[in-house]
Image (cartoon, rainbow, N blue to C red):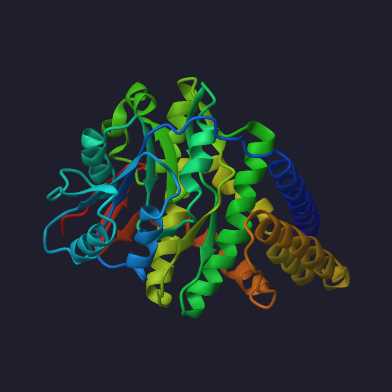
Length: 371
């Protein structure tokens, strides 16, 4: 058992070094210069009042870009986000914007339904699909438009810097997002190229979405972002990790909400890419080092080594790539919490999302549980 644990720990330490190399490689590619400002449509699915929703949405009205429109979608007129959108439309009358009332979605993924309805009325081929808890600087559209000057490019994922709310659990989760999650994307990009899309802001062309079957093909998947990039890559379109880093504000969740969110994430990941999920064990050097110490206390020196290399990788990814502050005291606590949720992700096939329960299928699709 000790030999197996030491082998796993060795693999995890190598992975941490790969994350550092992948970060340096990502940062070594300069963003392209913008030569022509292609018109862009921003698609914003909304549902209720996220923390600081108005401040988040305002940053999209403030884009330093000559030709863009913003489309919003809610299920019903009673949604409190409607009032927020109305105030912003009055403040920015020179920005072309429209609010769509979609009604109840006919399938489980309401976000995909909203995106589909907005895409149907979007005037432009280049789409920026962004969640309501995202905040950006005025140069977002200029950056992604420059990247999409590449002819073959079809889909781009914007890396994100998780900004926690006031709760402890929110701060803890943000550390995992800014270190482990982003490191995994960077390593995958370096070793195999971007063959998937993830995150709360994705840029794609209408014609690329049409070529993979449109949102109708994505509607039954919980991780529709991941399969969007996967299907695009399989169809021969270019998929990249954008040079633009967004802010993802993750709110003020308490323990119960946070646990439900993280279980949804782990169970969805296990079904979207099962082998990759098992391989996530190699992203956890500190828990593995602790297991080695339990199995063989004489090998205690592996723990400070794991803490050192893990800390260095976490710092490079969060501080260099994402420009996020790293809480060194909470980092080992998040490592243990992430390990616990990873184990929990192997069990159960139901999730809770926006107050409703869903059953996950083995292929990553999901369906509403009516009871």
